[in-house]
Image (cartoon, rainbow, N blue to C red; front, side, top):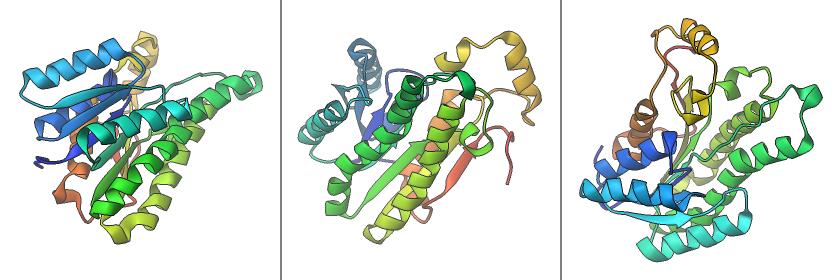
Length: 247
């Protein structure tokens, strides 16, 4: 799964799954454009990549803001000359029961988790079409497949990503561009760190493999889908959930 000569852009690359994806792609030889809001955290990730002999550059952007997506990706294209691999990973939660959910929390989650993926794809697709090669990888969630009480906004955004993945896959397949999704289950990240121990123990009972996943588990799947070995896979949702959802 070597990626020498490829350029990857990862959103939400400052921590968690996004950071793990950036580090893993760099280990496979890709140059990595790191996108997220926190400049300092991005610099730290870039430093880790450089220390391991890889190449990375930082492009601070808030993917909830369309103009920041456009300017950030424009800068990344100018810096690297192209983008071969796009990992739409940036995501947030604003959990609440539907009857109490504020419209602002619905909009924030849909804008960050779904609309940003559409906008980011729109900005890189020209580069991929021109070279007739590309990999678009959307990080969805098991809860976009099975739902979750208190997460109507999050589940809707992640389900929407699956639809976006399949529509894009059909649009660009003739240009040798694949579009796939990775659907993590319960992964140990800062987003899940605040959950109660009782909740975590109950979650593990739902996982046939008997453990929560790691960000690296997701990153390995992303690297595979970005590689030549996955060239005949498109429109697919790759479950990385320890067996929480099968079929």
